[in-house]
Every structure is written in C-alpha cells, then in structure tokens.
Image 1: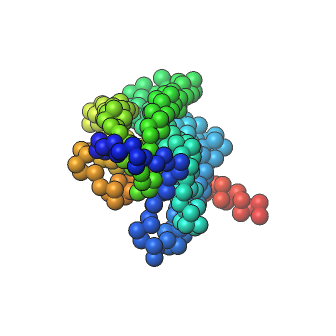
Image 2: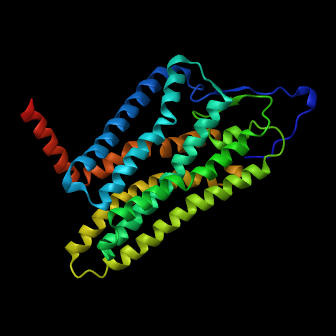
Image 3: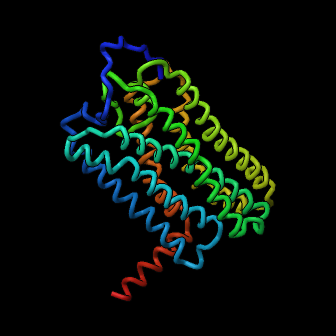
Length: 314
C-alpha cells in the first residue's frame, strides 16, 4: 500500500462501480478455473456441512472440542461464501463489475469472518490446553461465551474500518486486480493520502491477528511443557495427536494471512497477494474437514455409523 498522489481536479472522475479483474490475465483458463472453483466450493459446503451436522446429531460428539469444531465448520462455510460465489459468477459470465455498495459489503463480511476465525482458532487452542490441565472448567456455558465473544468482538471494528475505507474518494481507474474486494487493492484506487487508512489496517491486523496468534503460541507452549512431563511415550503421542490437526489449520491460515497483511509495502505483489488470499479464504476451508476428519477416529466412526444406517434404511 503506497500513498496516493491527488490528481488535478479537472481529471477527477468519481468511481461508481469497480471491476474485479480476478484471473482475467489468463483468459484461456477461465472455464477451467470456473469448474475447479465450483468443485472446491461444493466440496467445502458438503464437507464442512457434514462435520457441522454430525457434531450436532451424535451424542458421542458433544464435548467442548466438537462444539468448537462445529462452529468453526459453520464459520468456514460463511467465510468462503463471501468470496467464491461472486468469483464463480465473474468467471462464468465474464461480467466483472461490482457496485461500491456490494464491494463494501463483501470486504466487511470477509474482514468480520477473518477476525472471527482468528479468535476461534485461539479459543480452540485454549480448549486443548484446558482439556489437558483442567477438563472440568470448560462447561457448556463457558463454551457459548467464548464462541459468542469470537463472533461479535470484531464486528464493530471491521464495520468501522470498512466505512472509513469507502468514505475515501475513488477516481481514475476502477479496476481491482483481485478476485474479491480486499483492502490493499481497493486502497490503491483511492484518491489522496491513504496513510491513516494503511496504519489502521496494520493496527487492526496486529491487534486481531498477532494477538490471537500469540495466544495460540502461549497455549501450545504450556501444552507441550505439560505433555513432556507425561510418564509414558504412548500418552505423549496421544496428546500430541489431538493437537496436531488444529496446529496444521493454524499454520495454514495465519501463515498466509500474516504474510499478506503485515509484510512491508515494498514487497507487495498483486499476483502474490492473490495466491496468498486463495490460501486463507479458500484452501483453509477446504482442508479443514480433511485435516480434522481423516485424523480423528471419533469423526470417522460417526460417519461410518451414519453411512451404515442410511444403507440399512435404503
């Protein structure tokens, strides 16, 4: 994000809509990308939806860990639905225009869901710590409070940040070199000095992203120190196994997100930004069910029981 020079007043043309370029630079792959992202979207909806349903239906999956996993799966459906349907429509129709209002709404939802994911991942790490140290502490009331706090904490901040960005005047080019209305490419189209907005973006990214990430690191440092004190190697392996799935999702989401929003301005590349954005907006929601279900015996057992039950009914 660089400071923008204010063009002469005569040359100012107020922008009333944007054009999401997306992957327009590779026109020969438009239908291939449409098919690929459509399959990914269906997989995300079905896999995360399945995890959400089985954790609600099966009495054996009513522990705090699965309560948080159900909420996380629902969040992933919301998160990916804020970007992928518009991308699919743009790829399928080649009509890439988006109004300022729709662009602002998309940015706001992406930011809110991103902030919620930061907090929810931190809560899930804390749950793993409590499960090892004090399992009785995490009752249903505490779980609801933590999830509610994760969902609502970022809403006023992200609405305010979106309002501030779209209060800026936009003039000249209206082409957003991205597949959704992300902060950096939108700010590049604003007239005048965007320094205050850039500082606000960094501040919010540090407060939400880095704070949540440090909480996760703190939880896992305590978890590791406790696990290493276990007398048996089998107990250590089992404890590490329950944490490894969550750690994989954390590294994928925070790794790409931190690089995108906190790296220096001089290293910003629009192509790199798009690739990194694919990781935290699409690939994380897709890999989340695979990571948790394929590495979780309880989830696999529940799925087998449901499939067997359906076969008997048929």
